[in-house]
Image (cartoon, rainbow, N blue to C red; front, top):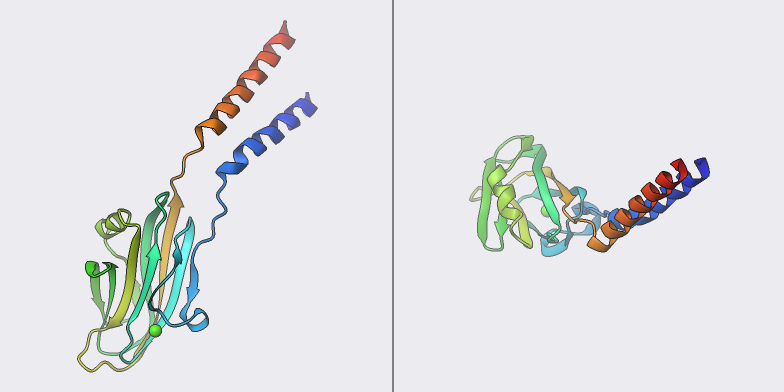
Length: 179
Ligand SMILES: [Ca+2]
């Protein structure tokens, strides 16, 4: 019986394996991976996607991200450290159209509204933008985006059907043994 059970569990593991996504969230560090200049830096994946950057003087940091249709953004935070300039801005945008904008002038953790997150979940590509909000910007700060996402992919019907057949077969086997 133990042998049958372990064999069944192994079968279940094989059947379930295609459902487990190999998540590779974005991990971008401007200091290592290059200046954020408006180019695409990749596709969101389930888990914690992070983008780290810094601002110095008149610096426009824009990163374009893509969102696969089966990836849903759960939350976004924007963390600022070592803030040392008059005022700055972070912005979420639909390429040319502002979805969310917040001014800040101190270290802190900032969170875009739930409505902004919902809006991003309707887009396949969007931009995250940080820049100074002064006529003559000076100074600097460091920042980090944390974008938590999950997969909404559902199991393939064929996989579910196989799983159901496996369960039915096990039930029949058990019933026969009892007789
Ligand atoms: Ca920068």
